[in-house]
Every structure is written in C-alpha cells, then in structure tokens.
Image (cartoon, rainbow, N blue to C red; front, side):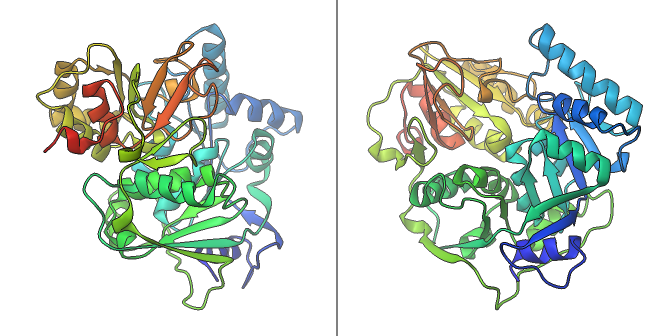
Length: 418
C-alpha cells in the first residue's frame, strides 16, 4: 500500500484498503477556524447532542479575521470561544494563536500517522509530517465532532519524485508551483500526492510544509511526505501524545509516478489568476506591483522570514509599494524578534502584523483595491482572492517577494544579491 492507504487502513481497522473503496475512518484531530467553526457548531446543535465525542481531539483556532476586523467577525469568534469553553475543547485566544496550519504542527498536535480533518482546505499542510490531513466541509466537521469518525472514499495516490541538485533561491514553494504548473489545478483531483526523492530528502521541514500546504491547489485530497530523521527531529520535542510512523511499501501501486529534475527548476512565479499559471521568474517580464505580502500558512515560518530578511537587510522597501510581513504564529514572531529579523523589516519600511490569515483571503490587513497588483507568498491567486476582482495576485517564494519589495517590480533575488 501507499502511505495514504497505510494510514487509512489502520484508522479503518482493516488490513488493507483500495482506491475507490468507501470506508469509515477514525480521526485523531479535528480543527476549525473563526469562519468555518460557527457553521459546524450550529450544525452540531441541530443534532440534538449535548457533548462532542472527545474534547481532547477538537481544536478551534481563530485566525482568519483575528484580531476581529468588525462586529460580525467579533461575533464569529465569540460564538466559537463560548462553544469551546462549554465543551472543553482546545481553543487558542489572541496572544496564543497563530495561523492554524503553522500553529498546530508547531505545538505537536499533528503527528505522523494521524488522520487529521479540518474545516479549511489547507489542512493538508499536516501531510509534511507523514499524516493523512485533509480539508472537509463544516457540516462534515459537525458530524465528526459528534462521532469521531468520517466516511470517505480511499483516494488513488500519485507519486512525485524529485532528483538533481536544487538551484540557489529555489525552495519548496518553487517545487510545488512548478509541479502544479505541470499537472494543472485538477491534475491530482481527489488523489493523494506522495512526495519523495533525493531533493525531498534534503528539503527542510518548512519547505515540506509549504509543498504539502499547496497540494490542494492541484485538487489533491492530501499531500504526504514519508517520515524520515528530519521529521522525527521536528516531532520528538513537540509531541504531546504517542504516534505511529507508517511508510509506503516498496511494491505499492500508484495511479501515476512523475519524476522531475530539480536542477532545471528556477524560482517560480504564478501569474493571475491560477497557481497553475507558473513561469520561471526570468520569463515573467517587467511587472510593477503595489504590494508585497510575505507570510501566510504557506510561507510564514521562521525559515521564510530569514530568507526574506537576508535579502532586505541594508535596503529599503521601494517607496511606491507596501510590504506586509505576517509571521505564521506567535512563536515564529518571537523567534524572528530575537534574531533581529523584525528590526530589519521595520528599518527597511515594511509593516509587521500579528499572525493572521488576513489579506490572503481578502479579509483584512492588506486588501487590494481596483487595479492594484500584489506579489504574495500565499497559496491562491484567483480572481478577487485578496480584494477587488479588478486586482491581480502573483505567487512566489519569500526570496522573490523580498527582492521585489526592494525594486517595486517582480524581481529575481539574483538581481539583488550578486
């Protein structure tokens, strides 16, 4: 069996599962945020139950409109907070919270071998730890809060193998944008993406989180990495409970196997209005921008901020643009502060905000006006994603974003760091 099939069969109490088979699966963690949790909570109330199945396996993270941007968002957070207190579930208040897909792995709440479901499509980020993590609708989350189970179809698995020596300034973001550009936004539709190969072995955990996060942008049900020494080094000091490592079998059957020569991959930029519209930064042309956003659940980790700060240090943000830095969690914020990264950003003329999804979904803290153009390290650039439907969003890695913040146009970091 593949890695996804190994995890699902164990959680379905079956010796083996096959793609296309419908199974009932035990879950290890259920999560929701300040947009999706209220819907799930109301649906849970319609079931007529007084208690969730296990409050230790449910967590709410208010991260989309936090701090609350208006009365409506404040009411969403209040409803979620009250339910969490009544039920005794996990809840992260402002000051302890972070972007859910950064925070929960960081705190050891997502572990190898887990089945994790979340009322957010980027729940697949947890696959970097060798977990089967997937997004679901709020009504499905309500049912899972009641029973502890989900009903699903076993997805086929696509295997992606990356070989060769990776170029300077190329990271996980570029590997996944290149892959999505190759297979398309529906190239892994309702499939598990399994990432492997020598390049993946050398890739940092932060880079793996980035790739797993964007599996959904290829239509995938989940994006998984086999557990190795790097995974264990990350998990061991964080784990709050026991976990089990699963590995794909050598004779596992894959629906398709794709191999890439990473040496041929440059830093990528996805042009509007699709993550699949990816091109090497050298082929993008002269694109002027109004805003740069560095952060999000895709690229808001410490490694990302280090890369950006390394390029921005000693320079100034272009006077014609805004540069917004959003750490992925309070811990990332604190670590970056201790390392002096925040001083570099602020001295350069950037703005640092509290951890939040904020502008990524066009919520707050950097919404775009008509005709404005943003280069972001986020995961989506659909029409109207960050504000006005007349705005444009380009996706790139933190190095390209930092270089572009200095020049005011989409720029390769090679033009800044000689």
